[in-house]
Length: 192
Image 1 (cartoon, rainbow, N blue to C red):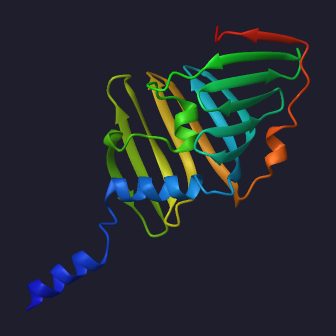
Image 2: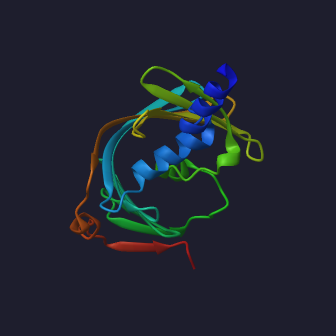
C-alpha cells in the first residue's frame, strides 16, 4: 500500500532534481513570444586581471538578441553578429559558428542538455552545473524555480572565468529597440 503511494507521487510530480526539467524551464522563460529583457553584470577574470561591465540584454526570440553596453552594442540575428563600436563608429559583421559554445549561447540558454552534469536544488533556486568536454569548459546557471536566471558562470581555461549576475528580468520588448542602432562611419565585414 505504501509503495503504491510513492509510485503515485512519482507520477504526479516531475523529478525536480532532473537537469533537463530545469533547463527547459529556463528556456521557456527566456524564449517568450513577447520577448524578455534583463541586465547582466559581467565580471571576466583572466589570470590576475579582472574586468567588469554592465549590459542590457533584450531577446525577441531564440535567434534575435540585442546587448547594449557603454562602448558597444551587439545585435545577434540568426547566425549573424553585428558589433557596433560607439567610440570609433565602426560596425563589424561576423558569423556565429553554431557548433561552438560561448557567452551568447549561455545568455540565450541555448545549451545542449547533454552538457548538464548535476542540478543542486535549493529552497528557492536551482544551480545547473555543466561540462563541455570537447572545449574544456565548465560552469553553472542559477535559476529561480519559476525559470528566471539569476547567475551564469563559464570557465573556459585555467584561471579564466566569466561570471554574470542577472537582474531586473522583465517580459516584453519593443520591436523598435532592434531598429534604433548606433550610426556607423565604417563597416568591416568578416562574414565575406
